[in-house]
Length: 455
Image (cartoon, rainbow, N blue to C red; front, side, top):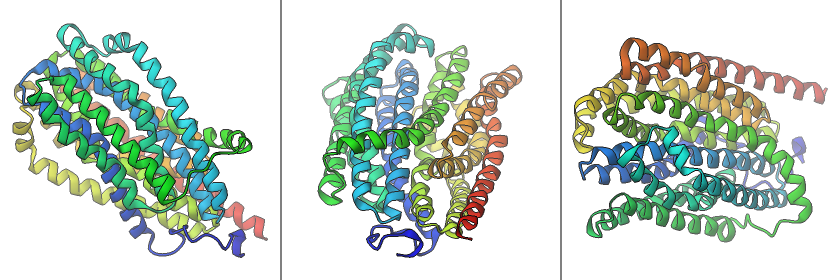
C-alpha cells in the first residue's frame, strides 16, 4: 500500500496519464452536460422569441435570474459532493465513497425542497425587486411558479452528474443533462405553438426535462456505478460537517454570480424593456457559450481531488496549470465564433434596435474579458477541493461586490446601459488574477507541508 493508498482504487482514473488530456476530456464532457442544463433555457428563449413579444423576452430575463440563482446553488452542492467522493475514490475507499454519495444525495434533495418552497412563496416580491412590472410581471410569474417546485429534481440531476464525474465517468455525466435538453427541445414547439401555451408551455417543457434528467441520473448512480446505498445513520451524521464545510462556501461562492447579475439587471431596468430583452439574451448566451469554463469548477475538482487524496502534488500542480491553459484556449476559440456569428444570432433571436447595440457591445468587449471569470473558476475549484472553500467564497463575493457595483456605477454614468454591461466585465480582471496567484501559492504550501510530514 504505497502512499497510504488502498489497492482497491481501480476507479481512480486520474492518478496517471496526461493531466491536460484529463482536463480537456472532463471539461468538454462536463460542458456538454452543464451547457445542456442552460441550453434548456436558451431553447425556451429562442422559441418564445419567435412570437415577437418584447415583454416575453424581458420576463424571461427577470425569471431567469432567479432560476440561475437556484441552479448556481445546485452546482455548489454538487461541488461538495465531487470533492468528498473523489477524495475517497482516490484513496481507494469505495465503501466510504458510496456512503458519502448517498448521504449527499439526501442532503441535496432536502435542502433544495426547502429553497424551492421559499422561492415559490416569495416569487412576487423577488420579481418586483428585479424590475418586473405590469405584463412583464404577469408573464415572469406564470413561468416561474411552474418551474420552481421542481428544484429538487434539478438537485438530483446535478448531484448525480457530480457523482459520475467523481468516479471518472465523464460520458454518462454528460448524458444525464443531455437527456434533459433533448426532452425540452422536443416538447417546446409542441407546447408553445401547437397547443398555444406560450410561456407557460415553455415552463412545462422545462419541468419534463428535469424529470427525465433526474430519472436517468438516479439510474446511473444506482444501477451502473452502484454508488447508492441506504446511508447509515452514523454516515449521515459524520458526513454532514465535512460536506457542508465544502458545499456551504461553494454555494455562497456560486450564488455570488447571480447576485452580481441581479444587480446589473436592476441597473438596466431603468433603461426599459429593450435593455432588459438584451440582458435576457446575454444571460442565456453566456452559460451556453462559456459552458466549458463554468464546467471547469466541477471537471477539474475530481482530477485535483484524486491526486490530492493520493498525495501526488506534482500532478495536482499539473492539473491546475492544465486547467488554466484550457481556460485561455477555450476563451479565444469561443470568442472568435461568437464575434463571427453576431449578426446571425441577432437575426435568429429577433434582436433589433437598442437591444442589438447592447448585445454587440457585450460580444466585442465583455466576451473576451470573460477569460478572467474562467481562470477564477479554476482557482475556486482548487480552493474547494483542497478544503479552503472559504477562499473561493471570498474571491467570488469580492468580484460580485467590489468587482461589480463600483464598475457598473461608473460605466453607467459615462456610457449608460452599455457601460453597465461592460463595467461588470472589467471588474472581474483583478479578482481573476489574484485568485490564480493565491491558488498556486496554496498548492505549494500544502506540498511543502506534505513533504515535512514524510521527513
